[in-house]
Length: 195
Image (cartoon, rainbow, N blue to C red; front, top):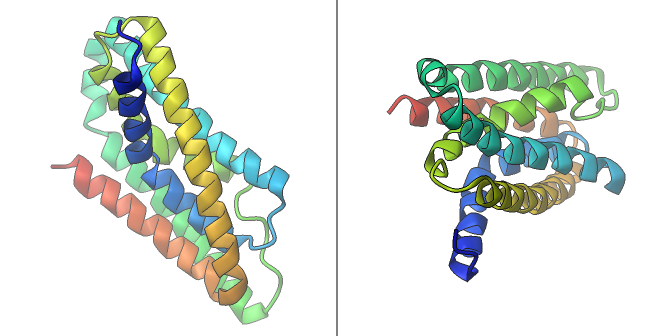
């Protein structure tokens, strides 16, 4: 195991690539809840970061334990991500249409259950990272997963802040836009995963 700048740069770039789905969902959450407090922003970004950390480690463990079982489930990952994001995005879209009609204040962007589903849906593709780092000793896999989680946290905070800023300008349309973004991400994950 070589601990050098190239290893950490690779991990950071890997994390940035994996965090793009979480960034988009964070953007949608910020649009949906434009007055989100910093503590809640950290909780939302932290949830995405946690899942982006856990999934590569889970993939690494699977390779070293139950690789044959996981291989049969891997083809369903795009379907699972699509279903989860269609559900959440559709729900957000419907709430946006209802709230726009009633002109009432929007509820929090992501309750705990929705946030957990978003975390799983946006990080499920990171399971495959565990396969690519399978030859790495557990210390290296842990370091890479921690780096991916830290990068995701920062990127998601940025997404939430950008979403909040545009959310106040978009008012009632923000929730609808957030739902459309989530549905789009689900479709993108599905199409990419089916190639």
